[in-house]
Structures are given as C-alpha cells and as structure tokens.
Length: 149
Image 1: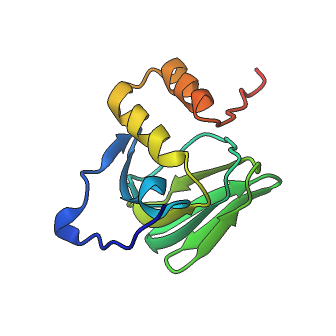
Image 2: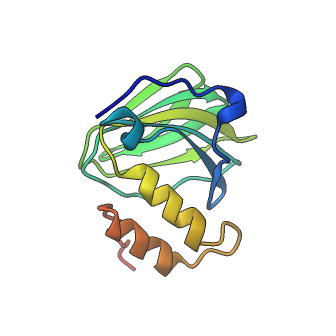
Image 3: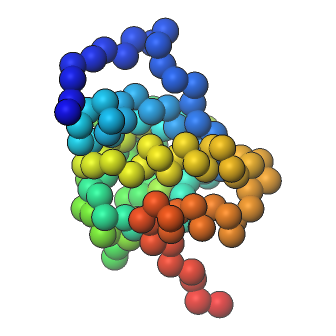
C-alpha cells in the first residue's frame, strides 16, 4: 500500500553507480505502491545499450541534451525541457550529449530500482563485466539483444 512522503535533498539516498552514469532512486515502487522515479546523470557518451523491458518509462531532460533511439526512430535529440515516453516492450537506448547531462525518469511499475541496485552492488562502474551486467539485466526482466557480428 502506498503512503504519502517527502524526499528532501538532505534525505536523498546516495546515487547508484552505473557504467558512466549515476542513478538516484527518488521513489521506489515499495514507497509509491506502483511506479518508480529516478534522477539520472551521466558523462558525455554514457548510456545503456539497446534494450527493452515490460514497463513503460518516461524521461524528462533537465540538463544538457540526450540522444535517444526508440524502435525504428533513431537519433532523437532531446534538449532540456523535453519529455520522451517509451512504451513497455519498445527497444530503446540513450546517450548523454557533450558535457554530460541529467534527467528525471519514471517507470510505470517496479523493476528498475532493483536492477540499478544490483548493478551498483555487483558490477564495477569503471571496468564492467558486460556478461555479468547482461545476466543481471535478464534476471530483472530486461531483454538486451546481442548485435549480429
């Protein structure tokens, strides 16, 4: 069951370290009863490979610009103030632009917070084991298509 809550800057959880990215869990599904909210920041060029998952996801760019690809729509440049909604099951990716950037993201249900937490705990952000990363992704319901050689 959800309950009302406030997360002030002095009560934020430390950011989770992903490969080239930091993800702060602002609200988990355990707190909200359904959706999750994150602040994501990244250095230039950082971002996940093409992947999909069953939950919807929305990104609101708050700093810099971020390059997105969604299904057949590739290289969509989202500048600060832009919202990008990704329907569950859509293959998508993003890359932070020059100078890095930041965005708020929201998922329609639980899943991402547990994934980010496990990656932070088990995968080096500077020397990642990509096999381990993909294994964690699959265990959390993500599909990461392997490109043809």
